[in-house]
Image (cartoon, rainbow, N blue to C red; front, side, top):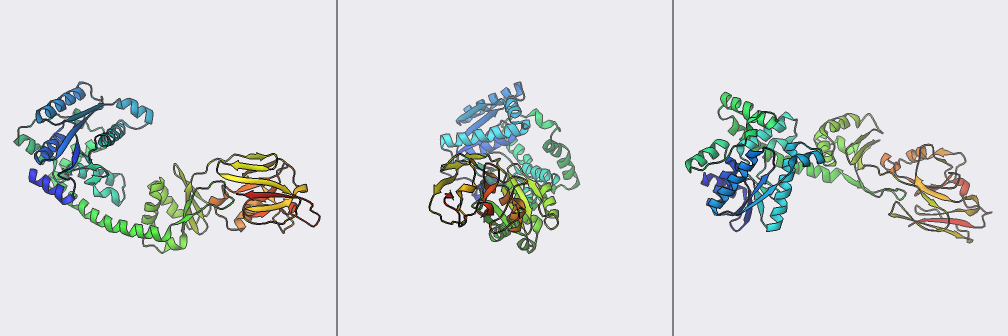
Length: 447
């Protein structure tokens, strides 16, 4: 047993002889075996035990057992108590998820506090198989079919090369007791159902099924390496950053993929899954997006913090729209809009005609104060410079092929009568233009 774990540690490059490690110690067979094996292999370890106060006297029994074991083995022990039910209620998560979050948050904080190199946890091969089967049942992608990884950040799993039977035989051979969590005998959660009912049946049908599934997970890990390399290359080649326009009130960047580039990929579904998943889009949403990209321009999809726009010949992912306020401009001066956009309003008797993306002049006598800086609203109309009739601002932007994403935060400067004086970054209203009879101008600078 010692040799098998030692070989696995070396093979996966998990631990350093000169390192310092925390061992998560529940008192169960797996964690007790991990503690004793790492000690016998000569690693510098300290134990950490979490009491989640979920099983009454049994939780206290586990803590007492852990304390006694660490005293006998002369291993430093860190203990913490959690009100897990209160945490779950406060954060609206399951008890299982609450315990996981509390455990790993504490482990990482303790690791930093004592300067440990990593946290060792006692997941073994059977746990990896259970995880793979759970992910398979839940419709996971390729990443979920690799089981449990030996290293995840500062969390290390040295026992993934052995199974539960190996661990119990090892502890029996050295006469080491351990405690049993009674909740593991209940099949009220999916993992326990798999452990109690499915795995024994699989072993009965094919005695080497667990071993074979573990091998398959390793094959998938190798395939995943190639898959990741391909996806990363595709992301680098066809995903572009989209900067906001000068006239945008929201200065956050978006990402854009052109549909012609998308059509050339060997698997559009895989690409979209890997591109959109980090933005919080679900598998179901991504399937709907795949169906919409060539038939429903203008459709939007929302995750918790992002919006995807199907916009003509492109897909755009941008941060969710932040409601914008209006800024009243009573007189000339320098004004801050949305906290990060600066406008300078000034008057001049020198009649200059300025028309750039960020600076314009209009006939002062035609403008009634106060001005308002705001984003476009449904029904906004103006007379684009050089034209005679009015046009919906939205239609004007569509004609200019401005994306749905850019439209949502397009700014205008309006006068007292809600006439659009300037579609910021685009055009002034022709009614306010400087003419031969203009004697003074209003200058607006977007700084």
